[in-house]
Image (cartoon, rainbow over all chains, first blue to last red; front, side, top):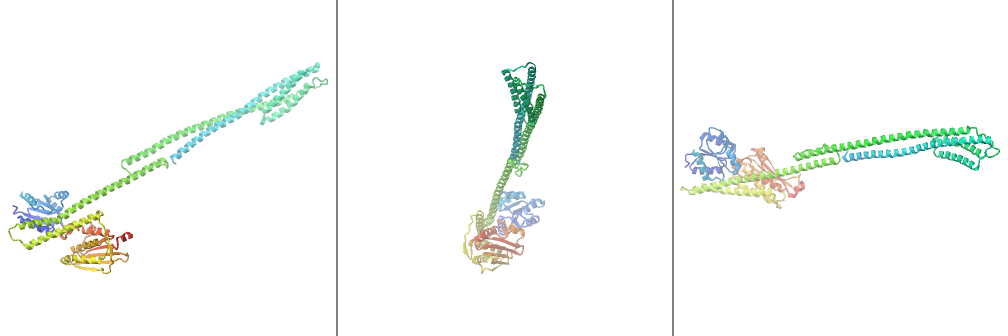
Length: 124
Length: 509
């Protein structure tokens, strides 16, 4: 159902990255992985993924800053970003939207729910 | 000067003026009275002198007539006539003696002269009457010398008395005008003083009350730093101003205390919220792996293709490790919460620190091998037994050693201990590694709960960010302290200083 779409997964924790990559691939998505915000921006420019799943606590350039820069950049601002974080409070939800994220999901991830969000944002 | 003293002084002055008035009046009355008596005496004396003069004149006329009659007609006096004449002489003598009572001081001399001359005259006249009927009567009564002499003296006395009367009248006038002047001056002075005292009191009180009012308005509007300091009175109003100032000072302190208590409460509340948010975040991280891997494995079991057993086992290990990590995290959170609410108790017992350090190293051995680190122990043989909390001691060094191993690869970790010669009963433990080290900014926050050098640390190295906070709090509970030195790329050294007995720290403090 979501085949042909490419997902950029930005996650610095190896275990979680490995797990998410495998699950997204099982769901039929093409997955590109990045370990920090700067790498994510580079990949967004080079490969133009259909959507980005962005962890927020990242080394080098964190998820909020990376999202803000992506949304200020005309070349990549059209790529939807879903914030993915273990910060579950309302305040962090607001931070994510303030940084320009298009949607927000908390860890532990509700995987079916996440797939619905991806579908919604990549349909257009 | 205090208001009370000013009032007292003014009232005393008014009373003194009043007393001056009364005194002047009394003295004036007395003086007038005295002068009046003297004046009346003088006037009476003058009247009496006139009367005596008249009597003397009459008597001379009678003597002269009788003498002429005797010479010409051999006239004889009857007994009654003689008696009447003698009585007249004695009356004159009595009157002259009366005059003596009215003469004093400067008129006494005049009186004596009069008395002398009149005595001669009257005696002669008495002789004249008594020898009138004698056949051998031979007296020349025409000689006026004695009479004139007495008359002259009488006149002089009379003049003197009149002069005195005039003088005394003058004194009376003078006394009256003087006492009037003094009374009027004192009266106006006391009226003026009373009026100005009243005016001063009203304006002074008004001014002071206005300043007090201004102060209370300032205090009321919240300016508690305002001071009523322009009341130049050391008495009641000054005391009142001081009391107001003290009240505002206490109010300010109370408000500051309340504000501080509120700030502290807010801060504590804020800290609690942050703590809860952090706990939630930390619990979700291992739970993400547990749930994610479990769901994935569940899905893979449903696949038609053959199961990759080694991969499956590796994924299960991840779930198990994450579960254990979650358990450690929960234990750490409970410990920290116990410490922060003051419920963490200290179980003192005699233990051998060397033994516990060795056990901790043994438990760590597999992890050391996986990071290819070499452990060195030093100075542990000569350590004394400690009378402190053995379980907390074990946890401090388990945490420090596991941290050292976590951030060091292919390096060295050393544990050294020594007794402090300068502080008997104190032992210093140092855990040194040759790992990644920390910047000074990271060092400053390294003992704060949920803080790791940066967010990637927990991702790449694991851990809850609670281990060092617990080490710090446990060291303090045991009466000691913990410190750290570090350099990026060189490694870190954590130094724990512990007393033989926690009470030693109290004694040292």
